[in-house]
Amino acid sequence: MVRLQKPSVINAGAAARKILPKMKCLVLVSVLAASALGLSARPTTAPITPVKGESWLNHLHQRFEETSMGKTYHLGPPLATGAEETQDWQRLLSADSIKQTAFMRGSDLYRLNCWGCHGEFGLGAPPEINSVVNPTRATSTQLIMERMKNLGMEMSRVDAAQLASQSKAALLQRLHNGGANMPPFPHLSEAEVHAIFNYLRQLAGIPGAEKQQAVIKESRLQVGEHIVKSTCHICHNAAGNNPEPQQIFDGAIPPLNTLTTRVSLPDFERKVRIGAPITMGTPPSQFRGRMPVFYYLREEEVADAYLYLKVYPSALESLDPVLPATENNQAASKMVPVEYTAEPQIAAGTNAAELSTIVFPVVSETFVALLLIGGLWFTFREIRRLTAIHEQRKVSSMDGDNTAYGISERNHIAGREDVSHEQPFQGKEDYHRFESSWFSRLVEKEDEAA
Image 1 (cartoon, one colour):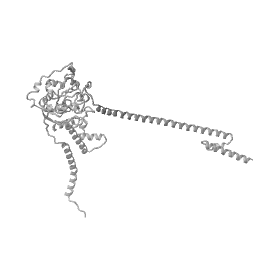
Image 2 (cartoon, rainbow, N blue to C red; image 1 turned 180 degrees about the vertical axis):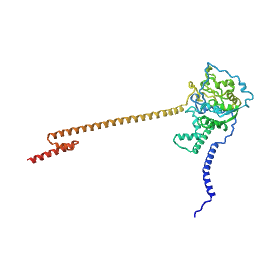
Image 3 (cartoon, rainbow, N blue to C red; image 1 turned 60 degrees about the vertical axis):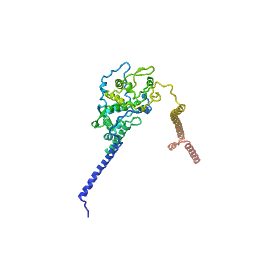
Image 4 (cartoon, rainbow, N blue to C red; image 1 turned 120 degrees about the vertical axis):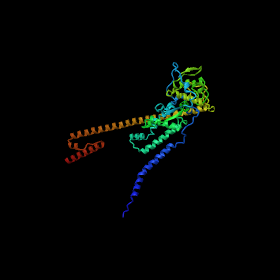
């Protein structure tokens, strides 16, 4: 007798089978969200602090003229032309400037923090500065699936979403902590980082990203902090002694802590946005400025940077000494101070290292050249050997043909036409066998006739 299950039990099992895949997807999405949001317990807002430490170029031991960091590739006007000063600076730095606020979009935060190195469209300057477009596209599930489909590889939406989540977590981590050649941005809050991230998605052409743009309310001091820490501090030390004109000519870059005491606000605005001559050398003379022009900054934003440096000056204990140009790796390529000498043991180590880097490629190239020459010689030798063998076989075959022709003529004269029907001989041994058999038959005929 077959027992039938109750309809309620059957319906419950079917419902469980339907819900189980959905529960798995829900658990997976929850894990991915937790991994994305649980990078670190960062505060939603970041306090304003003075800029500190050496410049990022000094940290990387790079010279200003040998890098693309912090450069817009726009220089100021030549010495023959000048720029008129603006007249509304008293309004920009009024008594209420500290209390004023501004509304910043993700595009504005990108412009203040990222444009100086990665450029307007995020393409960077490879190979030193990588593009941010492709890493941002890797955060889109739709673009990942389309790319895999174009490569002839099918990928489920769940797997693509997992890859996109991992890419997003890595990109947010990079915005917070920087990388090998990218400075960290601890002054950015979570809201600011996500605003920049959403703008990068729009810059990378991810569908629907334009609807995710947010607006953040910032104080003017915060705007100035973005510019100083993300753009100015790339090349300028936070604190230090003001260099002499000859030191500037040798490549030293003035620190930020003395800026507001040696440069007025109108001169600062003109220097940053338009460009201005600089006094350097011995005797002090006017030269065209070497500092890039940050034309994409607004006048009020430059004023905010000046205000930030006045309100939050670098502490005296963080003073960094102004070193000679060759020691701080910012020397101009034209100038090498005479007093710079290297210790003998350091020079010997350096020469040994340089010698090894030179000798190894030379030995490798010589070995490869010998292999090629040996291969060509062996090939030429084999061609000659095979050619000689071919010629010998050709001569042997010609000699065999001539011998066969002579024997057939003798047989015809002797009246032995039937011999021509036999198989022709191929060499000397066949010829000798033919001669002996012919002689024996002749002797037998003469005996029979007798």
